Image (cartoon, rainbow, N blue to C red; front, side):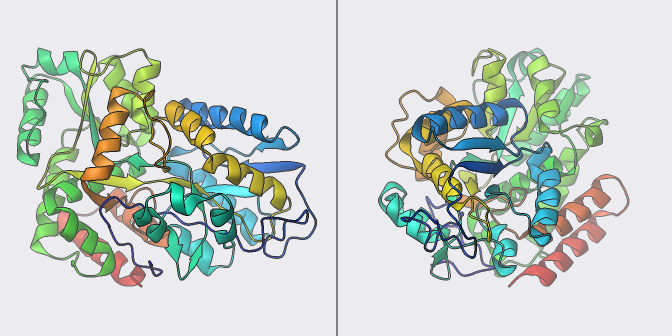
Length: 430
């Protein structure tokens, strides 16, 4: 099992959390200190407030209404890329003793903060009741287990280290879109070609999207074993390998749009859809934006993982918890049942652009891109995302984000950036 503060990358594994003590069965729910049944409604707290994320939530809610027509769904969505605004509001509510009935969290080390604060409860009984030990891969169940407990149930799996490109912009610049670049150096050469052609080579947005780019570069430059060692202490953040990765990140940032700090991921992705930029490195929730714009893979846009030493699946997953003192624990249990169900995972992932956590969901309806994600997750090395809470605690991620913002705004140089990343690791590794 996985112990707290260590995020191990197991081939075909994911990082999530989730199990519920004494929550299944009776009318009173019994979720860690919350009294009464509380099954007539459920407040679901997420950051799925726009774009493909909202489309996924809407699809999931339709299944929920079919499965639990007597339970009122209360939408607690708070807008903000990668959940930064939502997490701040959520923490204020939890500290004030006013938790929602369930809240979205990134599966993995992000949950350690809530676990250590006693803010979420073990949902292992629900895991067993819903038959999830058979529905999820053994490696996933192992990743979900923290000190013999499970603290959340995943609704999906995403790949974070994807490159999205505008086919016409690339071909107009003389870049062959039939064959993706084979290395980071070749990708950087393409960025230089695009810049010379007067094109915005690489679109990014605000700080969290830059951290998403950083992790993709480190995965590609270091390879899975060395990258994963950054989080269990076996790889030092002050090593020459990391220095080389940060230099590649610095190069990539030199090819980005100047208005990046005012943009969130949908804005940066839209630049590719509109043809005002050539490439964007973003998680595969972006594919739904291309599909909603009626763009076709290959004809209108290209997609490939950021190339490096080996083929890597940058892992993250959205998951849902049962907070300590949830006012409607039975409503929360109903929601967790829906997000864990085959129907729920099918509807949600089709709309959101992710792939199911369950192995028994029929993916025949999924897009050409999604089929590549299913194959990659089954076959490639797995690296946990920094930007999306799989690899680091919230405090550690915040420190990385602060250091990245200082670096990309010119407030510190590369040596200072690497020193700050090492300090963040020293302060947060368990």
